[in-house]
Image: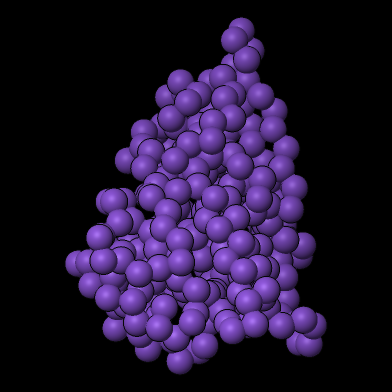
Length: 251
């Protein structure tokens, strides 16, 4: 098993370096894109929790890769706080780690006994044929990290997810006949609001997201204000798909 560890200053600006560190190791290990993004997202959330809430000066990120997947460890010298967090603050918190990982262990630091270790396992899944058809989702988001993070989370929940970073790319991806489209309205300088209207005309459900209030003329099945917890987005996705399945016109 390959084991690597690196120490980072416990500063929010270092989250980008932590993500790059994990992504580089995952890529070198031959891990495919979907699983790579899951691993990077989970590591980002654990590191965010340590940096923002432990009071530690440093964060140690460890990587172990073997036949059965990847173990990531995030250690600090502070006190453990399992904060939910928001995307605006750099992460969505430990709930996302629990959702993405196969197994999570926490050795919690306490006052007088400082030092927290969060260790989680993401299993390698070889491509397989057959099985039930997965629902196809399309995510249109011009924010590269936000889009990839949400896509990785939804993929871990069993959906087949395509990601488009612009309105033209999103329009082209509609040829893949997604069962639901998630659109950040601010993509392509706000032109994605028009894309929402185009999609709703085809009877495909649309979940619109934005850091700003919804435009007055926005057409979508649901709107969620960013930053949104991925579990909230997942709940809306499931509800919209259930509504379609029960609607003989749209099913």
